[in-house]
Length: 467
Length: 149
Image 1: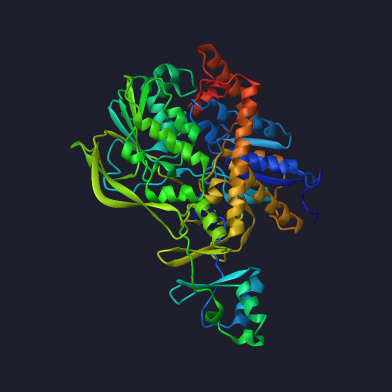
Image 2: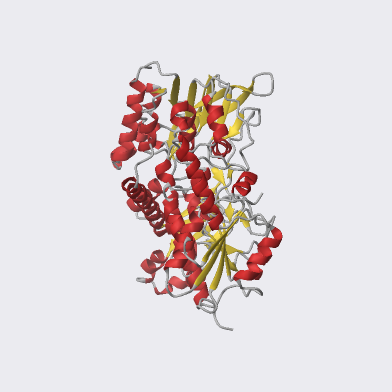
């Protein structure tokens, strides 16, 4: 048997997950010239782009522009997309093994980490990721509801998702109306009665994960006055020493911006955005009707670990916030895929540099790979997944050179199409998506927005004349 | 980015040696796994030292009988241990400042992995590359069509 990778017998690769990493992996596979590769990309939702569509905030359209690069990758005639096809529901790992030489899982981190405190499951306590998926029109989350009649809300965490949520809650209806936020979310947020948004960081201002542009943006909101507590943005001794040892202009700037916020007086804008530092929620308290009424916080101080990382430690001094709505954004975790070994310690697929490992022997499984957040955990920016996918792809090509790959019984594009048609006749191709994209953009033009999203699968199918 | 994100894609195996084993046995392990250092653990899997190829070379240069010595005689006992939540920036700085090439990682004092300075440098390089990639893309877009906010 000849080794796959020729014009007559291309290397057939299935990529599970149509987010940035899936496209980066595809791009790396298409760019190399040694091997002829066919890529079929699957996603459980009908539309591509993963978190660029369903995660990146609607008022950050510039970041969403990365999809232009993905469309270029998808224009390769050796690329196909099967949208709305879910692993474990419509196709199994064994189905893929029967049709492909190699499989790459790029499903990302689909769930959030919990705070692990009493009251976390009260009503009006939510994962920030669910709110994000909701306002971005993700079909699986569009029917959630959030009680925006509350006046005070806490966002737990100081990463980019926390910043997004705080900003979206603080935007005016006019600002939101200029974005591609889901229609129902625009309506709900326009009627919101939220007046105070607290953003809570467990460490100090210098350790906050959000970037300087993100922080600055919070200080320039037309509809919200930003503030901070002077004592909480003052640098502690350990941070000061660390900055002296290793001066870092970015961090210094971040602290300066936050100190300036702490000096600001309210100017009478309709909302207030209050940044808190060195506090951790320890309990959400019931309002007497099964929903969040207040939050109990403990104040922290920093200590240095053996390697010099500054971490929070509870002081025993407590504080309370009267908030009726809580969004937690304290980290993310991957979700196990049916039939794929999982590393529960880190919430990722069990792997070594992208090669999926057997759960028992810890040896690589032939023909199975992973990349992106489901490989290394949720770190970095969108572009970080490009070198990460490159590492995985170089492992795939190394293995191919050593003739290590699956030996599928049905290695043809037609066989795959027959299988998918049988299991999920309503799947969307990339052509279908490009048509939807055009319709969404056209609907947006009519109302002065980047696009008006379809948020129901049946509406997408109807728009394509397939209902 | 923290140590956990490095361990997540390293696979679960850490090659270890016990203090009473011989240098001959330790060398066999270094060669077999093609690595530069072994974490020395006690019976409860708690790290008690680290033995690097350098530790062995240093002794071998002046002592022919090095092979029969015990690991505990040559290992470095002054250990710095990493934690999964430690950030790569401070980890990288500490490893560079103190000239440490390998850092054992523990959870509740139990060994769960080892990272090398190379792992840290590569992860940071990937992070910077990713940021550059993302920034370039945003800038290119800004020139391509009117920014939408």
